[in-house]
Image (cartoon, rainbow, N blue to C red):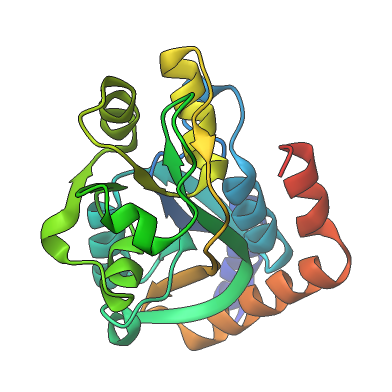
Amino acid sequence: MALLTALGLMLGPLSAWAGPRELVLECDHLPPACNTPADGSPGFMIDIGQEALRRAGFSAQVRIVPWKRAMQDAEYHNDTLIVYFARTPEREASFRWIDITNQTTFAFMTKEQAPPVDTLAQAQMLGAIGIRAGSSVRSWLIEHGIAATMLQESTLETMARMLKAGRVPVFFGAPSTFVPLYTKLNGSRPVVGAPLYASDNWLASGLGFPAGDAARIGAAVRAMKADGSITAILAKYGQ
């Protein structure tokens, strides 16, 4: 008994010293939402995700990786979460949908001085639509009558260059991430059409992620929405 007591006294301080359990928080590189250290700030979605984990009693190891890798990591590792994740029919059964953090608005964008594209019908007349590879907008466009053969997919940076060069006539995505990148690469702003829809951004995990931990994190997200913390983070980034 004395040995067990001594062992407990030894392990107690070590456990306290170890700090909160670390979870992996992943997102694709989408400034200003999800940034790398070279971008100078975490990004508004990373800030939201880190604060939710902190309030739930965890720490976050942030990894910026392509969506395909992030989805695989979340599916096969029970300590991994994805932030800024859209809930689509194709993804529905593969993930635990913890809570909605905020929304992203989507619109068509054309190169500077080109006419705005405000409707799906106008975009169809142009013959091709650029989208970011792996984006949830692909499902939405096809669901709303756009043929998959019309879609040209690549990285956001490639799409910004292709639009500027006239290799695609129009791009469909989130102005919040595409406009800053296009402006940085090309020295001018694209023309943004009317917003067509808004998609919920989810904090999600694989199905094996502990349900109790997910509940704590979801409660933290809801508290952040209620007390204005998420609104404040978005405002800090000009969103």
